[in-house]
Length: 337
Picture 1 (cartoon, one colour):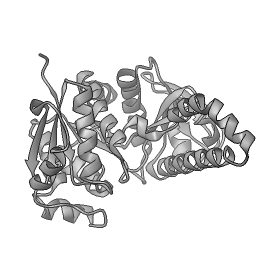
Picture 2: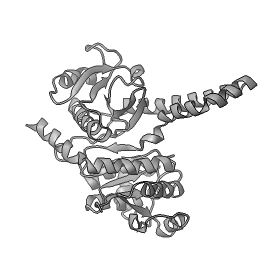
Picture 3: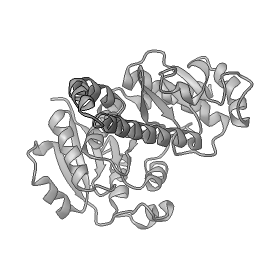
Picture 4: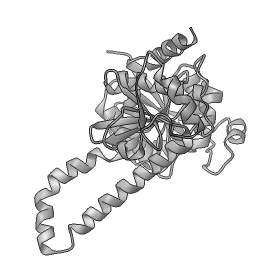
């Protein structure tokens, strides 16, 4: 039997912990026999949740952690002081090589700090970005960065483009992925100082498929596969995506219930509509990987349910099996040469 891909999961992180976290973890191991999950959290509570499920005992291990880092806590201080927290202990499993990856719906700040301080950056990587997959008309695109670096420099964005290209090609399977930079117009001379300075550098990168600027309205059409921006812009795009998507689904459902005729029509189109809307459900894509670290760190939404946790764990398998970190190292090394 092939060796397990080992994933440390913060069982205490998120609005729905530990119930939805444990449920998602068990769903992942029951779906894929190549993964082993280390549930890190208050052991008695975690084991109580586990008692409701049937699973292969070899694929699940509980690691006791007595402390929990809350969302409102200052991240740096929390990481330093709460050494026995589920976040710190789970990340140390990755640092020590016991686990290949880490998944958490807990504190974003603590995850970002812990990723850099505990897991550590790949040599040559200036700033590790958060990079979620977002749905598009043609499948999905990688939004990089969406929350880690709000004051990025051009050199950071160049690395984001390269790391994003590696991820889309080897994890998602898109050959020669199209890279675009978020801008307020298609023309090369448009944009703020950061975009204007970065554009020609991306244009002259020989190892990425740069196609120019992308306006926000073109993102859902699938115009590009890797969407490069600094974290402030990326986070606004991501949150707007989530808000508009949720509102549209709600409005469609309400519209279908307005009359007897619309209700009958709803019954007829429900299967096709359900499948279409599923493609635009962000939960289906798992969490946002923090690229450029010595191990994989995946941050899911604080409100994550079991589906997103399961998919976040499963995406760690492809990442590990495709040896993404080594491929990123190669890209960054080429850049230095």
